[in-house]
Length: 236
Length: 236
DNA sequence: ACAAAAGTGTTATGGATACACCCATGT
DNA sequence: ACATGGGTGTATCCATAACACTTTTGT
Image (cartoon, rainbow over all chains, first blue to last red; front, side, top):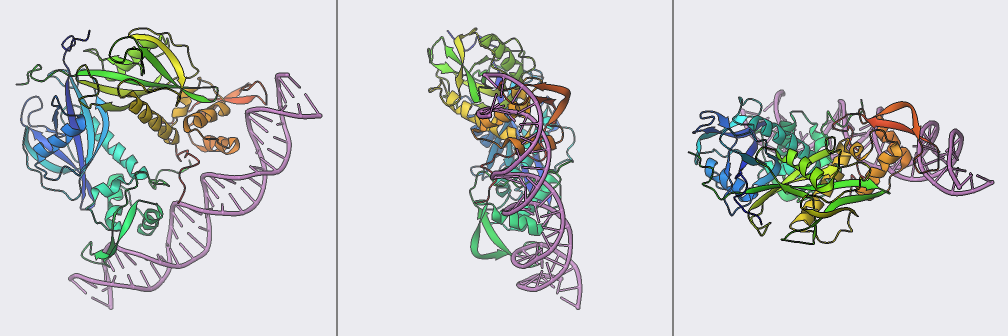
């Protein structure tokens, strides 16, 4: 009763908004398109779903193919939403599932697959992107900004062992605000399951200053209480 | 260079988790399937995307077709996420975009389209649903529960003019908790843009008690500060 | 009169903020 | 010595929770 060719076929793709924090700024991974449409434009990495893989699997595969990243297995991938406007791709009907991904450090990407080249660009300084990728990128930034308040997501931007200063700089880069180091520290340590100390370990961060204690992600999915942005959560 | 038939075609569907609040409880709209697979099972309303409509448009159309609701234009539809596991539908490869919808009152549904019949079922008392709809329903409930904390979403469950008691019962039904009427009232009124009073109007709610003042949705997208669940936001 | 729901007042608690201050390291 | 970032202490402020109390209706 259901003929799989009775309907106009839909192509299903994934698009990835890949973020990292480096030098106190938020960076976004872009690829330069090698083919029409939008040849020569910058775009979010992504590609078509294969018949036997889920959108999550496709996102991970495309990220590896187009950037050359080796360690995609452990990366945090979060499904954002699906963009399905009929005219969003001039070629054909394409429904795209968008993901936000977070990587620690900033591994140098090597263009591959359909991408002419790939590069990290400071968030906010990218030009207009191909397709509806400006919209996707804005949605992705909004999402991770909100997730930082309620989840332990910020640890995904960090190496396995990190200092509280590094963690704080993640918040500052994504939110674009400054945070009080002392109060940030207390809030994080008072939130059960956010971070766990690494006994005895310490590391210099900025080259100067007192070596900072090291922590690991605590595994808590949600933060109680939430770590609200300083400019929000205010009454009139 | 891109052949639209080079890939196995994907069918794209929408699934809707439609909630309402009635008699102090949260209800979910289900349809009984008339065709295989899962004939006779209860499922979320939904259906296939047409070639020229977005997922949002398809969701609104399917809701009207399968339930007979007249006023689908103003309903709140929120995209949840997309379910794309290759084996989630035994017939073929189906990628489904899930939505949560909220309706005030509880208009009586009339089965139509592919649905044998449609009915409101108290949330939590539904049996196992077809496909992966149990999972979708759980995700939808989690999402709206969280949205109530941070957005004015609760007003979408209410008629255009509502009392603060009605608004509070929305929170209580979705969260499954009791709330202090006095403190709830103050929180709502102290949150800019959440509700605006209707001058001079009042209405009896339970048949007894003092008539309550009427309010309209204030149009605020996000609540500052958030209206947190009583059992959450606690330290250890 | 009583019950029920709306609405106001009041107090105690606790978290957040702001900022002062000490510690340990590199230059 | 000094700059820099880590880390601790602390007083003020303000939102919240808890609950007593008043108001207005139906039965």
